[in-house]
Length: 182
Image (cartoon, rainbow, N blue to C red; front, top):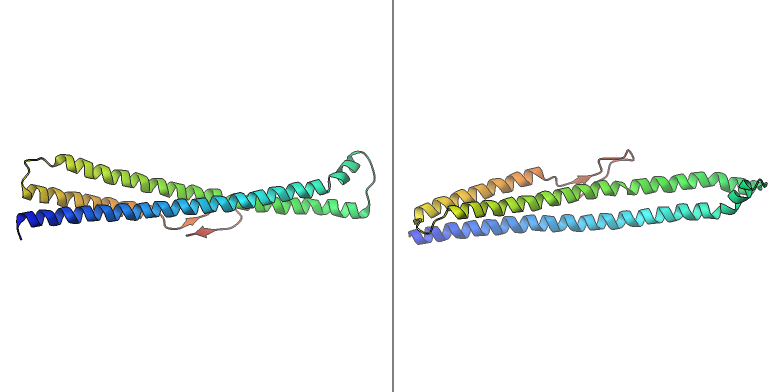
C-alpha cells in the first residue's frame, strides 16, 4: 500500500470515528432533553391538578368555615364534610409532593446532558490541540503517527465519558418511594 493510501486510510478512520462519537453523544443529549421535557410536562400537570383540587376542596367548605368563625352552629353533615376536608387536602398535598420528585430526576437528566456537552467540547479541543501539532512540512509518517495519537486520545475520552454517565435516572430524594426511569 502506498504512503498516500495509508495516510488517507488513517484520516478517513479518524474522521469517521469523530463523526460517529459526536453523533452518538448528540443523540443521547437529544434523548435526555426530550425526556426532561416530558418529565417537566407531567410534573407540572400533576402539580396543577393537585393544587387546584386543594383549592376546590377548601373553597367547597369555605361557607362552613366562615359560619364557624362567626360563632355559628353547623350541622352534623357539615361537621362530617369538614372533618373529611383535612384528609382530602392531605392526600392532594402528598400527591403534589410526589410530583416534586420529578424535579430530582430532571436535575439528573440536565446534569448528564451538561456532562455530554462538556465531553464533546473536550473532544473537539483534543482534535484542535493535536491539529496544531501538524505542520505543513510534516511527512507522511509523522502525520500517520499524529493521527494515531489523536484517534487513541479521542477513543479514551469517549470511553471515559461513557463510564461517567449513568444510563438510568432515579429518584434520590424524598421518602415516598423509589422511582427509576429510562
